[in-house]
Amino acid sequence: MLSALAQETRLELFRMLGAQGATGLAAGDIAHRLKIPASTASFHLTAMERAGLLQATRQGRSVIYAVRHFAVRELMAFLAEPLGETLPGMREDIAAMLPAPAIAGMQPAFNVLFLCTANAARSIMAEAILNRVGAGRFNAYSAGSAPASGPNPIVIARLAALGHDTASLRSKRWDDFARREAPRMDFVIALCDTLDGQACPDFGQRAITCSWPLPDPAKFGGSPVEQATMLNELYASLLRRILIFINLPFSALDRLAVQRRMDELGNAVRA
Image (cartoon, rainbow, N blue to C red; front, side, top):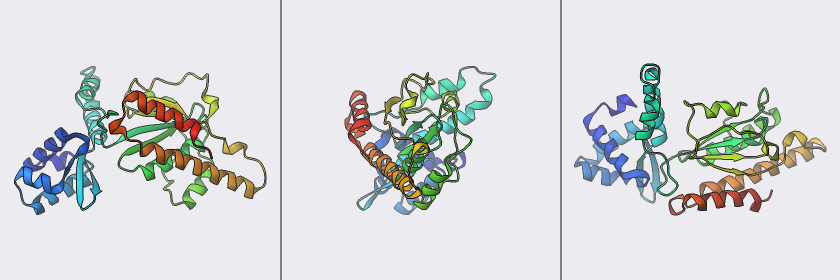
């Protein structure tokens, strides 16, 4: 990322898009504003997108570019890490200077954490689904209060059969996401009733929390065919919820309205 910014035109381009916010700018408008040829603008935009600084979205015949604020926050946190011992509060000061994704005026990417006791099935499926259907706009994570030694092999096999990349999926403890260096969560979604009454870690005041209770695949009975059918139904239920979630009009809703929509998804969409 630093290498991609080490050029005057790219730095000016980055600052311009940063000021533009989540709406971004079309490639043609960028070239016009910077008074450079379209081919030159395309060259710089491609380099910055490959470096992870920008996100490109096609709208009709235009390609819209916007700053990936989440990636930039991670870069700044990485740079500040060695200063943590000598300059207390440095990481927090840098984080405060960077724009945080807001509900009204959505930034290019929201962080979403799915919770389940064992983090072996439901939350693993949700993580895989959101990372595919919400790629570029949402970053999905999952964790549990008492994580299993690893994801449910049947769940992993089903996800793989459906074309998901399962290489990075693993069971994690939810405390890992309450640490200072962890990504800041915008949404925390519990997928099982057993979390009720447990003391969840503090994920920060920014996170919107809700519950989408779903059955535990580990308790599915019946023949292998019946179990496979129920697993498919669970996947379909999660997919429907997540597709509705990612298509909510975030830019037109305030925080309370988003919270209400998220709560409704926990009850209105049935498997």
